[in-house]
Image (cartoon, rainbow, N blue to C red; front, side, top):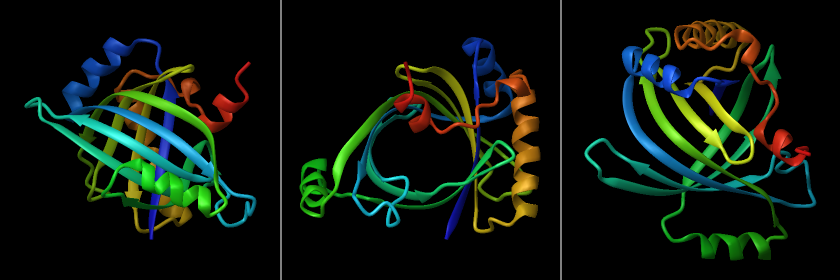
Length: 193
């Protein structure tokens, strides 16, 4: 079981934030992500839906990696930090077979979102996978700095440590704490005027 401990914040100065990330973290790739969320009548089975992500990664040497990922989560917010129990797997074939499977299983597509941006890895002694930092533009919303730590432990002690690291990294990137956004993207997109 993996826990995703995540913090996101609005970004006003994209160039400055990117320059700071380039100084303190290792650039991984640019990306384009298209997400479609599928829902069924049984809200207890998948309370936040099932996400189909079509992801394109453009690596520094200009090679391209495409991935099709299925994700479902149990979501929780603690002190402005998302703590999600996440399950994810890849789909080998195109999305058509998965979409047909979902429809036959009683699911229907819901909202979708598009993300474009860049990804870095910030080394961190407290978490062996480090921190994934993404400077991303969400179509219809704007620019965000998303930072995520993966952990096998979702205890409050671990979440508190992760939160402190994420807050410090946010500061190192020049993003003030009042820019932290605790709402989920789905909530912001669905309730957008």
